[in-house]
Image (cartoon, each protein chain N blue to C red):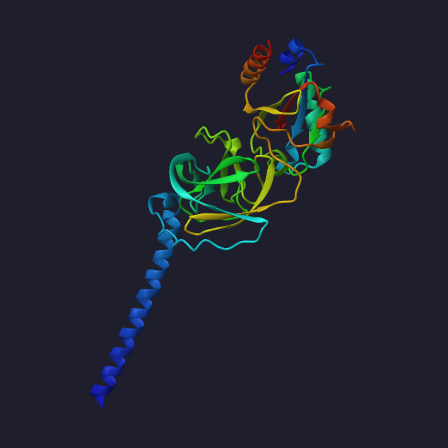
Length: 101
Length: 223
């Protein structure tokens, strides 16, 4: 996803990480520390990360998402895709750009 | 007298024997139930009889349901039996369909043809075990996971939230109540619900901050 963001530009594509670690019994402090380590390894420590205190229960309640994956929201706030893999995101973004032009 | 005593003794012994056998059958029967539990799909329960369509309050909506040809992936319920064997139910489940008007639009909703229809989740089980209701707003006959909603939470149908109030045990109607809660849930082609979070580095983020940009929501964990 870092590559896609670099291609598009940070001003055009943002990522918001929603961590469900606390849902596996981790306390918040451990989740924050562990998440930061993982993000540093991936080179994305500057991405905003949110800890969902009830893990997937919160994800399901707020977004009706009960699994890992990516969801794309358009610049107008409209949902463009749900349960996407990285390649799906690339394709979807291309399709949206093509539709515009 | 001896003969009378004999008859009483034999009757008593016979009764005791019958009771003992019945108890053993009962125990065997419950053992049998435990052993066959992972294969419950092969022993379909008798369908519950439909109840009459109820009269409801103004804030409630009754949606009549009819059997359809549409199916979806089952609940993928994960269980571990007494022998410690894991089981995942992956069968496709047949669905009943109802049509609900939300504003000027019509939504097709689907629930399993056969019950039970739990409206609360069993916290002891893995995942949410309440009935899943699918909303096919794009009416393409496909019901991916993200078009399914657990009935223990409010359900988004279009841009309105509903609570699942009751379901006919026979699966022929469902009562939905308009829920006065903020919009939640992602629906393709619809507005993302507003959110506001604190990030781990102490900043507040909300949906409005991302106006004019594409936003990827990434559900993840380090584990």
